[in-house]
Length: 359
Image 1 (tube, helix red, strand yellow):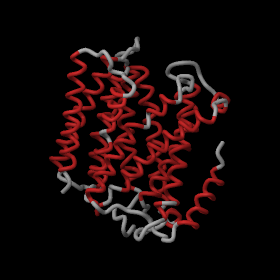
Image 2: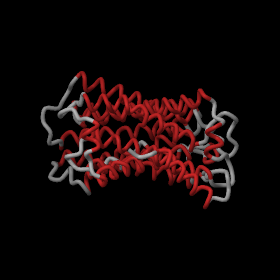
Image 3: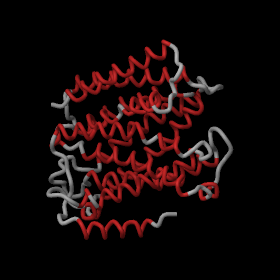
Image 4: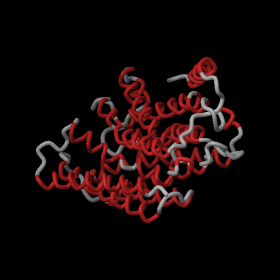
């Protein structure tokens, strides 16, 4: 296993050598914030490709451990670099040491909840298929997440934001139906267990982001005493996900929805390139999530609701990978092509309206 203390020492050494300022990098320009949220969308919709690259012989339950390691290591790297370099704010370690215990627990809980939601969604897809699990789970996450984030920090025009979310939700539904029509698997369909996993996953996915956002001060230039910066909140989120995987990941390994159980011995049999692919997947997701939190500041005129909503257009990015790279829709009939066309039209309109919702 990777020695976490050694990694932290290396990051501190790099920090001392190269970074002269002792504050942090923040985003206050609205246009830049929107562009970085598009990067979030790209990252959230692309990290899953690394699981495909890991190979069919490397089970998802094993890949997921590398993914969790990746997001944790990336959060540390970001904290000791961008989180400790700039002209405003508060440096990573200093901010982490002064955070209120309740807010620390909120961010840790957010990470653990995200982890549970991710694992449940994968299980739901295995039981019920993409056509049911994907649109219902991500649809619930999108609507609930935007609502809770808006309640936390009401930024943006509520009517336009709701309309944009509705359009993105419609694109997610089109994506799920099209994927279901093209699914080559058999024996999947309606299942009470699969539906339960889907609904619970969607609820948890919608809750995790505001729990983490609650732990940080949205006025990033002058963080209030006891509150975190985006860098510390993100680090605690990834730490919560990593630690919780000793419970959730172990259960998934011992009681998989499909296939035979796997063990930790199986994990350590994996070669270095396979492990690194999983770590890369975690870094890609981590970059997107970190940017989403960094861009949610009030000075950028986004807020967590808009920042989260833009990132949740990620299923369309995943669909683009499926269409042009993995050829998952090759040979599909006209109804699937119509659904895909509708998916992209509603998605682009939704993103445009969400951007217009900035007040």
